[in-house]
Image (cartoon, rainbow, N blue to C red; front, side, top):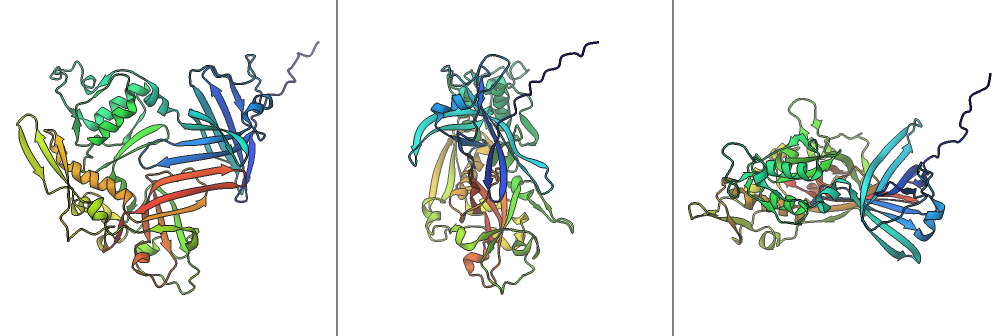
Length: 471
C-alpha cells in the first residue's frame, strides 16, 4: 500500500517589521495592493515609518507610510500568489490599497492587535529627507474613495421619490440628517453604513442637488452646514468601526459623565486620563470632583509640566473671532425679513452645550467671558423659510469656540485610539494654583491627534481644548 503524497511546501508567512519603542516590540505588517490584486510586503529593508492622524473637522482616519529606496523594493519583496505575479504594477487607474496590521505581546505573552485595517492610497510622492530617498504613500479610510472619486447624480428629491405627496421636485425640503444618511448610503452602496444608535436626524431641513461631476464630499459639507441637532445644538460627524455617526454636540458632552447614582459612569468617548506632574510634594486633595475625579491613587498617565504647552484664550477673541452671530432670515415664500437677535450669543451657546452635566457643572461656566464693553455683531444672511434657521448663529459660534478656547498640546505614548472628537481627563498635582491652573483640571476635547510609529518611536502628539472653567 502506497503512502499518499503530501505537500512539503510551507505557506509563506507575512513579513512583519519589528519596531522597538517605549520598551515594547511592535510587529508591523504593511502590504500594498493594486486594483488587480497584485501586492507586495513592505519589509524591514524598506520600512521607515507610519503616521496616523485624526482631526476634529474630518470623520476619517488618515496617515502616511514612508518607504526607503523604493527602486530596490520590488526585488526585496516578492509575493508568491497563485497567479504568476511578483510585484505591483501601476496601471494608471490610481487605485492603490494598503493593509496595515500592528500587534505586540502583553505581559501575559498574548498578542494584542492595535490595528488591522485596509486603507486607500490618496497620493504618492518621492522626496528626500536627511539625504535618504523616500517614497511617501498618503492613505485614508477606504470609504473616502467612494465619497471622493465616485461620480453620480444625487438630489434630495430622490429621498421620497414616488411617494404620495412628494411629486413636487425642486421644491420639497427634507430633513438634513435624513438627507446626509441617504447620500452616504447611495455613494457607498452600503445600507448598513449608518450607526443608527448614534444618529440624530436633527431639526434642520434642506433642498440640495449635487452638481454634476462633483464629489459627494462637497454634498456632505453643504448638508452639514444646514444641520441643527434635535436639541438645537451643533452636530458631531464621525466614522468609527466601519459606520458613520451623527450626534448632537450637547448629547456628546452630557453622555460623557454621569453621576446620577453613587457610581460614576463614563462614556466610551473618554480616551485617556492624565496628570500633569509638577513635583510639588505639598499637593493637597479637595472635595472637588473636577480635581480629584479618579482619586489620589489612580494610575494616571503622567505628563511633565515642562512637556505640556498651554495657550490661554486671547483677550480680544470676543471682538474679532467670537462676536455675536446674528441671523437675518429672509422667508422666500412670505417675503418677510426676521432678525434673530436672541441667538448667536455666548449665553445661548452655554445653554445648548450641556456643560452643567460635567463634574462641578453648577460651579462652572463656558470657558470664555461675555464681551460687556462692545456690542460686536456678525451678520449672517440666510434665504430660508425653515424654523431651524434661527439656530444657525448659535451653532456657528459653538463651532468657532474650538479654535479659540484654552489649548493644550503634548506628546504621550502612542495610541491610535486617541481620536479627535473624543475626550481626555487632565488634572494637576499642584497645591497652590493660580487662576489659570485652577481651570486646568477636568475634561478636554481632542481636536487633533498625530501618532507616529517608526524605529525607536511610538508617540502621539495631541491637541485639545478646555470647554469649561470655574465661574
